[in-house]
Image (cartoon, rainbow, N blue to C red; front, side):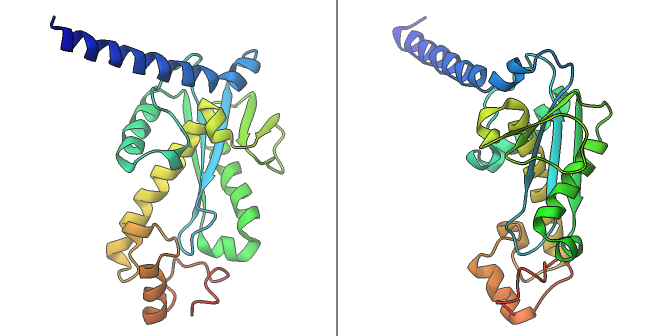
Length: 219
């Protein structure tokens, strides 16, 4: 092996060791609740967009499951999220996804719709969690013990996995809407209020997937 190859291998090993140390730090809550058989991470995406549903993910990972580069979905590229989504779906003990659509958001408000999506995600799991690690919130009407963690998608591997599952699920859905409901750029903006999206609203008005309570000032 040449000196250059040795140096490259050394750098790769150092990078891998650093990543494993980061992941180990993100298992702090999972270690704290290690007496529980099924630890479930909960997170949501889509509270801020003008269109589309709010989506929640619930993920139970096996004990000591290693998924390299698992992180808050907002800190990952689309390509990396897609790859991690596939790995999570392959390795997870259970995955549940819940949604609340635009009409429901308008009916009960975004916070209550988010809670509803989270309860739905939990109900879709094929095993019952012993504890829920939630990104920042305490979900009403849930009897399972809950641990709200501020910035939980950066501090818990379970919540990070739920964040990625929810994000990829929602992004794929918005991309599917784009050719069916053209003119707003949903594949690119995912329903968020970009210039292109707001211009589409001004020209076309609301679509069936817009949140009417969110777009009053644009139409």
